[in-house]
Length: 326
Image 1 (cartoon, rainbow, N blue to C red):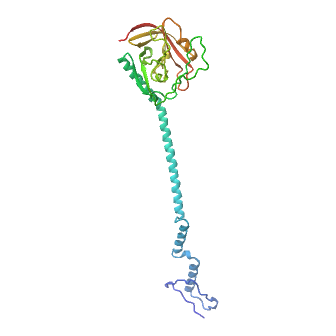
Image 2 (tube, helix red, strand yellow; image 1 turned 90 degrees about the vertical axis):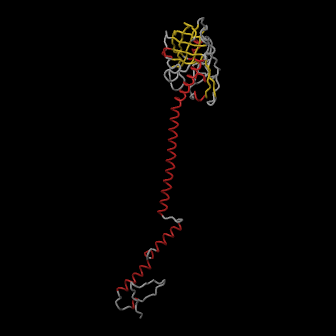
């Protein structure tokens, strides 16, 4: 019988890969407690290799890294969080840029009418100043888009027919070609209009083209010239700004005066009446047959920010004085 070997904790014992079998039944003596501890320790080491000094855990992590491209669960979690954060930042930045763009466009479209109105007034003021220096006439060139806000005027909205005539049903609704906003247009003037009642002094264009009406009221070419027999007709926008163009024409009443200065002469008309009519009836006032020198001012009614106003204001007057301009 072979005596069991007692393993001391001080021994540098390394378990063999293959243990020799031991016939425990043949042992008759009481085993040493130290021996039991050694055997138990050997079994524990053999059955639980991960409880070694850490080499098993390192091997496990290394193996997992090999199958996860070197990434642990924590690494993968961190990467996913980073990717999610990056995506959220991209979405947030995109929404922020979109909001800024919408805000900028909103500011632009809110400010655009004010910018256009200022350009219109500046052009009208310059023409008036030049005409006062040179009574023969003045002109200015401007970019169409600088003095015209889109949708501010629709050509052909007023149909002028002589009394007794029937409007042609096949008449085109638009009488002018659309103007490119980048086109350079020339606006001329040879006339000044003054209406003391509403504190208006403004140059007047020799036509009623839409491009001229953006900046100045205009004389209807088919009507009489001021001081001559017949009706001198002038059209102008009502405008939204108080006092701009014919904005306050509704305040002009019977007995008020209108002055037209042209080619060294000032013609004073006294107002006879004010009417609110439908556009189809304009011809009755503009083409009135008369042996006197009369005047008609026409604008839209009521003031509105969208669409074409339903009615027109017509102010009528007759010539009461003619004098030389100073």
